[in-house]
Each structure stands twice: as C-alpha cells, then as structure tokens.
Amino acid sequence: MNVRLPVTLAELFAALEEPGARVLAGGTDLLVQLRSRAGAHGSQTLVGLERIRELQGITATDGVIRIGAAETHASILENRLARSRLPLLTAALAELGGPAIRNMGTIGGNACTASPAGDSLPPLYALEAEVELASRQGLRRMAISGFIQGPGRTSLERGEILSALLVPQAKGFDLHHFEKVGRRSALAIAVVSLAALIRRDPSGRVLEARLALGSVGPTVLRCPEAENLLTGRRLTLASLKPAAAALRRAVTPIDDVRATAAYRRQVAGNLLLRLAVLA
Amino acid sequence: MTIRFVLNGREMCLDVAPDRRAVVLLREDLAVLGPKEGCGSGECGACSVLVDGEHRLSCLMLAAQLDGREVLTSEGLGDTETPHPLHQAFAAHGAVQCGFCSPGMVVAAAGLLGKKARPSREEVRRVLSGNLCRCTGYVKIVDAVLAAARVLRGRP
Ligand SMILES: Cc1cc2nc3c(=O)[nH]c(=O)nc-3n(C[C@H](O)[C@H](O)[C@H](O)COP(=O)(O)OP(=O)(O)OC[C@H]3O[C@@H](n4cnc5c(N)ncnc54)[C@H](O)[C@@H]3O)c2cc1C
Ligand code: FES
Ligand code: FES
Image (cartoon, rainbow over all chains, first blue to last red; front, side, top):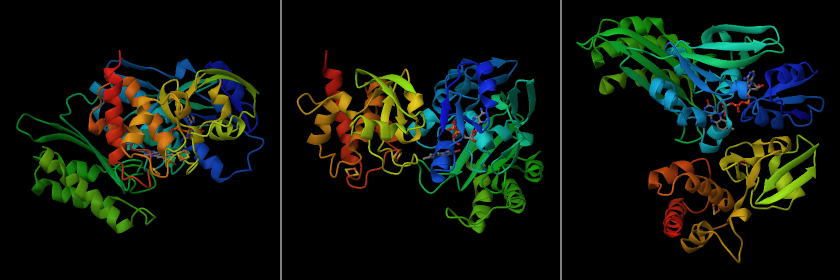
C-alpha cells in the first residue's frame, strides 16, 4: 500500500486520480477498517489530508461557521469561535472517543464515515449544516442530510472530497442540548444520542424545536412530528411526553452488540424528557 | 520511502515501507519498546506516543505520517539513571503493576503536563480516559500524575 501526503489541493486531486486511491484523514476509522481486512489492499494508495492547509481553519461569515474538513475534533474544541458559536457541536465532540482519538480524528472523517452513531452528525442535522465538496471540477454544496445517504454511504463522487462544513450559528435558540447514551463514558460508541435546539419566546413557549437522533436508524433522524408537537408549548413533562412518544414511533433502531432495538426506542424518548429539567 | 523524523531527541533517517504501522516501526525496526500494541484498533492507549507534543496512537499511524515530525515515547522522557518525575511518581505511588499500560499512561500524562502545569484531578482522569489499565484501578495512576505535576512545578 502506498501513502501520499500532498500539501496542496491541486496535488491532492492529482493523487486521487491514481487507481485504487483512497482519502486518509485521521485514520481512526479507515486504518481500523483496513487492518481488519489485512492483505487485500496491496494496490491501494492512501492519500492523506493532514498536510493540506486549505482543508484547515475555522472562520465565520454572516453567522455561518466554516470548518475545514481536516480540522481535528480536538482543534475544533480548542477553537474559541467554534466553542462560543457552536456549543451544540462542541458538546458532542467533547464526548467523541477519547483524547487521542479526538487529536487524530477529523470532522470531515466523521461525516464521510456516515455512521448513524457519528457524534458530530445529530448536531450538524439540528443546525442544518451544509457540506462543501471539492474536486477538479470545482465546488458544490448540499445539505448534510442529503450528503449522507445511508450507513457508510455519501454523495461523494470519485475524485471528490469533503472540503468543509458550513454550519449556521443557531441565532436566537436559547437551548442547545446534546446527550449521548453509551456503554461507558469514554471511548463509547453511542447507543442513542439526541441533539436538541429550542427557540422560545420570552414567556417560555417554543417557537421552533429541532430534534435530531443518532444510532436509531440507518442515518441520523430529524423528527418533524415531535418538533411540531412542541411548538407553541412550554417544555414541561406534559408537553414533552407526547413528543417523546412521537420520537419512539419515528425511530427504526436495530438490535446489535451494544443494545436491543426496544431499549434504543425507549431511551430515544426518554432523552427528550430531559428537556423538562433543563428548561 | 525515506523518512526523517526526530525520535526522543535523536534525528532518524530510515528507509521504510510507507504503510508500515508506526507502532511496528518503533518496536521492531528501532527497538523502542515503550509503546505496546494492545488492541491495534485505537481502543486501549497502550501504543500512545506524543507527536509534536500531541497524544496520538501509534497503532493508527503509518510510517509516512512520521516524516518531519517529532516523536516522543516514555524512553525519551528519561531512563533508569535519570528518570522523569512521572516515572518516579509512578514507581513511588504503586501506579505500575504488570506495566503494560504504563508507558502509554506516562506519555498521555506528559502530553497534559506539557500544556497544563496545574491540572485538576478531573482533568487528569479525562486525559487518561482512553488508556486502559487491567491492574491498578486507576486511582494510583491519577495520584502519581498529580504528584509528578507538583514536582515539575517546583523545578526552576
Ligand atoms: C477507539 C475509537 C473510538 C471512537 N469513538 C467514536 C465516538 O465516540 N464517536 C464517533 O462519532 N466516532 C468514534 N470513532 C470513529 C472515528 O474516530 C470518527 O468517526 C472520526 O471522526 C473519523 O475521522 P478520521 O479523520 O479519523 O477519518 P478516517 O478514518 O481518515 O476516514 C474515514 C472515512 O472517510 C473518508 N474521508 C475522510 N475525510 C474525508 C474527506 N475530507 N473527504 C472525503 N472522504 C474523506 C475516508 O476515505 C474513510 O473512508 C472512534 C474510533 C475509534 C478507533
Ligand atoms: S494498540 Fe493502539 S490503542 Fe490499543
Ligand atoms: S499495570 Fe497492568 S495494565 Fe496497567
């Protein structure tokens, strides 16, 4: 297996044209995956993103934060702009993996892996983030929910990379909440996770609710029915219970080594009830 | 390919397959035995190294990625004659039993102390949260790191 570490996007796109080329970001998903299928990738070339300046950096324009795809989780967590403007996202990244995984793994890698348990994804869905894709042909943009097509499947074309995440700052939203349930507190893949963004009027009535759930279906799920049930209501157990029931109806979880589908369905609703004590 | 990097303060230049995993390169090619391969998949932290001062896992790095970097393992912090305060504190606090996790723990702790001279107990626990120990129950490891931090702060 060959490894290339281009330093410019132009070099990257040239390297990606080699047969068998694959993008390597932090390697925390890809190298684990390649190792479990050892031996079968002699003719592959891994093309690393880690030395390409153009894929790094966090900037804000008109309330949209642009995060370079090769930014690591740790560098996003250390970034003042990201922490102050995207508290929902940073709350989730703080719980992703352990310290070394956060030093190595990138936000672009988390999105491209397209795992339903990817911790950055529920916040990115709730924030209605867009992805910027780059190739020799230029740039295109699309919603994160359109980019991710299924477990491990994205809209990336051959020769194309994810270059940045464009994340709107949730202006006016007064509740930014992320909670992940795992088997233990560090290095645990989510069994169920919830990202909630709530905007309320001064009397506490919900003007807009956005709810995104992880690990309860093939992709992260937004639940418009539950969101609508909360609109116009205050966040009390009485208003949250019907919305939690709607969440439980909307999810399509599976049984796996970490939890049963029934447990995931129950917890998906329970996580929403937490808002009663936060509000 | 030829890679050049600094390992524990020494300039290295070697010819190596670009996809050789860093943990194998360190242990088998260079006989640096601090980093251990426990799980080989990012779960245990036994292979921890510092790369340019940052805690990384050498089982999930390839040789090519070391080129131009500075790599530090437990050996680079000190040796039997001149141990590092972390080494001394681990020994003094009974933070080592079988020792398999210890070089990784020491390296993770050194990464923290490089950035933060006065970490809280909670910060130490968090920074070690990706490093598994099957023996000690962690309390003595955390005690040792806090003790080493005190020693390091007392130095001119
Ligand atoms: C021990 C351990 C614990 C973990 N815990 C968690 C956890 O709690 N939560 C969680 O969400 N994840 C977790 N992960 C998974 C992983 O760390 C994250 O998904 C991480 O964000 C992946 O990023 P990476 O940069 O390492 O991706 P890589 O492994 O480098 O790449 C992943 C995939 O995406 C492609 N790719 C990467 N970047 C781009 C790009 N910019 N453009 C196009 N394609 C690209 C690669 O080709 C590859 O197919 C864990 C992994 C390990 C090993
Ligand atoms: S061997 Fe690298 S984390 Fe376990
Ligand atoms: S001392 Fe044995 S694993 Fe930690």
